[in-house]
Image 1 (cartoon, rainbow, N blue to C red):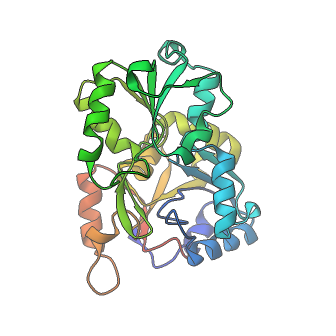
Image 2 (cartoon, rainbow, N blue to C red):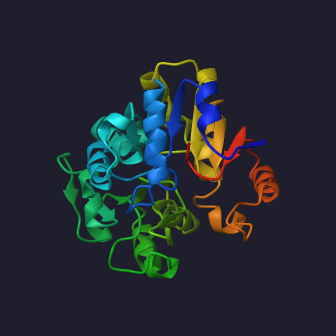
Length: 288
């Protein structure tokens, strides 16, 4: 595993990049200036960049959010979110599990995530008892997003009615504005422990990478995946035989900090081995 101080050498080795968003390009509140500059450098070099994010909202909603952060549309080639993938699956069911979901959806998540099913032939159920299935987009805005106990009763109620669950963001945790919070993936894991039937769309599922690679239009050996999560970004890349670059200063940043403003690369190598993944390199941040 190579440990680089910046991203520039990788731009010389690859022609396309699958880039994670949260933890790499922004923190959910603000764009990272160094990441915006890196995108500009990749664009100037003629490289193709596809943003692949476990965000439970459609592509357009995420693009609008990034625009407000100062990340212009022309800084990347394309985008695909887990929310967009869920929306497509709800519109055109890929298999019998999806086709038999029903039309009454109980939404577990904040109102800002509702564009994921707006305009689809679904009716919003007020309680699990009125629902055919549950769409999990993560903790809402009215409870402590760092405490699983806040959601236990609601998950148990959904399990009581044997509702199938769609998880629109397989991430377990994320750093939002410097605070570590739960994601939909953590709620889905707990729901499975309660006996619930869950389908997740997003990284590390290999299916999410197929449209990404088609849009990049490059052979896999010319593509590098970049992300901060071993469980989703790095493992997901491995699942489709893509080389991966691990950004240490994201979700694993606190555990890998060396106390001197940098990161413990030996500790990073141990963590990667424990996770049974092999990124080709690490960088502290997505910075040129």
